Length: 98
Image: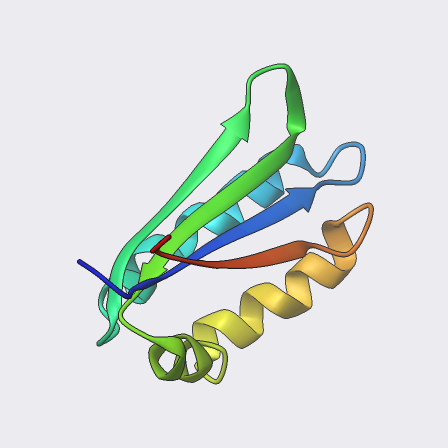
């Protein structure tokens, strides 16, 4: 789909918090995919560094993503991430190359 917004979010778990990070990100998939404007939402783990994960998301537009940030499941995971991440998560917004 042209002109969509792709998000690549990166996460680094504190030692001992790797499984909780996986669980929390996996729990975000179903409610996020149910949102209007969410086209895909998939977590990935780095097989060489199990404390590192990324989430690749695709949204119809910025408005859909902005709405996502206001919902209870996002607010919950944001609070949990503050506790379990070794560093702040990164967020890259990408659009289709012309």
